[in-house]
Image (cartoon, rainbow, N blue to C red; front, side, top):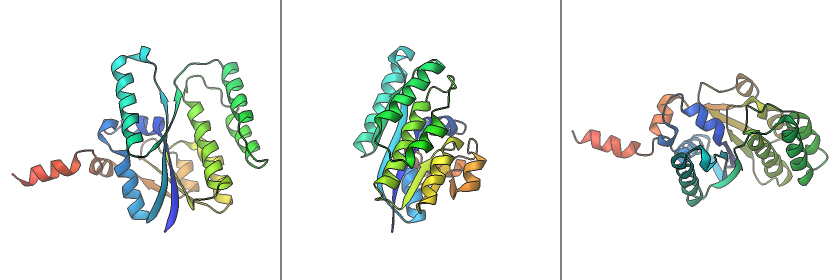
Length: 218
């Protein structure tokens, strides 16, 4: 059985799933369990990456978000967060440069991250720090540590193509997964993929099984 590490782009997941359903209704752990059974993977670790809003954006949303992250942690998910913030292009560049310099990356990995991610300066996409964190961890855990056979990325973002290509070139299996809308054609062209259609999402609702049982009673 192939050993897999799951990397979930929480921001991308939320924005794409909400095109179909309320994201809080869909259990990401059920989604991963479904993929694991179909692909016959032994999942070593699930890592959830997300930016956290400020309490100034609304107390209800803020505490609901924290509660959800606590739920994931209690289920054994490794949660990696970044604060959601607006920065100037110069500040973004400096923060990314500082992050790169603080990482113990090999000569092979550092230029990949430098070239592909440190030049991103779109202040409208405030979650870019999350993308960098995912890329760094995918390379570190899949290549430098080398304990897994499969890198499973739940995201539809084409920004991950260069890093996934590097991991694939080093002999690791790649699988990406996302909803039909918001799923990069480049990701699907270059790597094996698992589409989360609306029916699949619905079957992974948090209370889906209890609703089915109740319907059978009548």
